[in-house]
Length: 89
Image 1 (tube, rainbow, N blue to C red):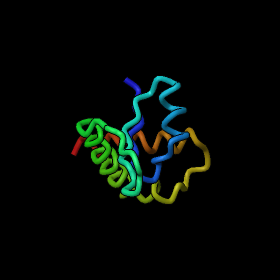
Image 2 (image 1 turned 90 degrees about the vertical axis):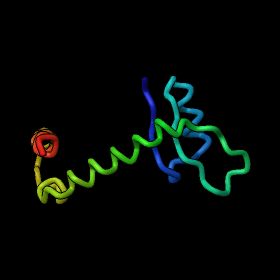
Image 3 (image 1 turned 135 degrees about the vertical axis):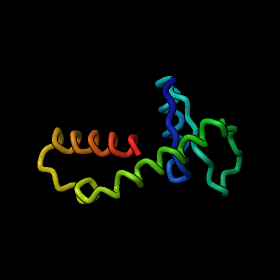
Image 4 (image 1 turned 180 degrees about the horizontal axis):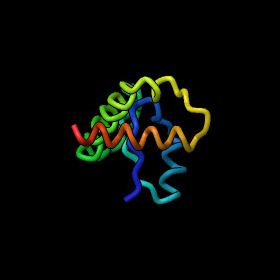
């Protein structure tokens, strides 16, 4: 299942239409000023919180937060290593 989990900042009709055309489930909380609220799957939306918490834990590692690696591959390696450390806690 492909899905985009996002917060209210990504609540745009053009983005939702494009993702739906690609066969992706769109789970975005709506802005409070939306005239016609669209239904979203709240159970799937709860996963967004877990993902945000994981990124916060990743940013505890100074090297990741400052993006001090010179190449994309070394940055990806550090993220993988930090993820392993976080999961082992």
